[in-house]
Image 1 (cartoon, rainbow, N blue to C red):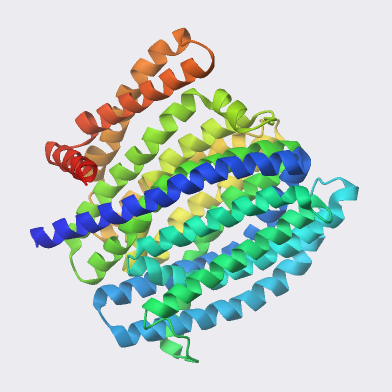
Image 2: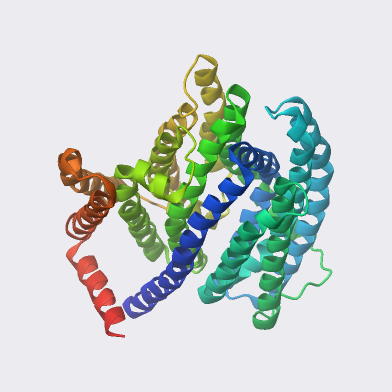
Length: 509
């Protein structure tokens, strides 16, 4: 078993490394493309694209719950090793997604048009363009929805090289779209939205071709089993609460900012969201490599390994994000000035708050996977999802009484910590995860690492030289402090030796 677990750890490390290559490429491309897009569209149109896309994303409360169900059921059946059942799950999930696409279009089309015309703060002459953005955003959303079974199959099979290569294709297409904006034959905002839909379609085709060539179960057959559909919808029904709360927190906050402020403030928030998404991708990639192992371990009855993996990956997810977040927190303004030609006002404060929120959420990612693996999620979703739903009304109250737009993110940070405590109490009964062990082995360690790593950069922040030299020195100092603190405070001796050995082996190769 020890050898088997060691092999699993090597698989996670290999897949994480492959996904990091993907992430670094997408990070560089994303920084450049967002600069080009903001410069080409202008602050207001960039804000319109973000907030209208947010309206469409609100409808992921319908699809997101089923997406989680598809991923969980495919990975779970692979862990149990039941091929015939896996074929049925895949075909059923495709049929469900097709049906769901028609439902979403039927709902989103009239509601989205009404909301843009009557509730959003958009200049009257830009409403026609905003309506076109809605159409193309809806098309992209439906195409992405149809990709879910293929993406779930790739991650369940742990074929992260394919996931990485297709992600790189996605980045190249987005770069091409950004460069083509200036050659628009029509309104630039409409042209950009249309090209983004074409890029999404190309990526969807790539996923479909790969899965059909490599995975026997990825052959759609007209298949309907009442019991399986009932199980998936039951799982999705309860998960709907959690997905709804997450979407309302993120996209609802963006819409609240638009209602109380202007599209320029949405642009500042959008820049922060994009930068945070790129940075948080390091954790997302790590969890993409870890999640199948957590679910498969639960399905095969390896409970002790699963609990160890949950605690270890929770720490590592935070550490991986912290190495990137720390230098960004200390150099936000300078980085934004390098990145963008014109920096929207308030962008820096939004960026810092979103980074803190991402660090808080990184601790919960493995806990969410563990609860989904059980399939018994009713009480969990009612309690944790209910707590997350408070983000929107609490944020509204703060904004109503004159709080700045950044309050929407500050509220999310506080609620994230409250939800973490609730998750731990519930998972104690669901899978036997000890809150006390999590607190001592995870939470205390990440607090100790954060405190130690912050000390020297804070002490020297006032004496750093200005300009590029000061930026480079600050980044190097922050990264060194973070890495040393993680290795000698956050990791055990065995983990430290394992990490150093893996790095040396990679360098040797």
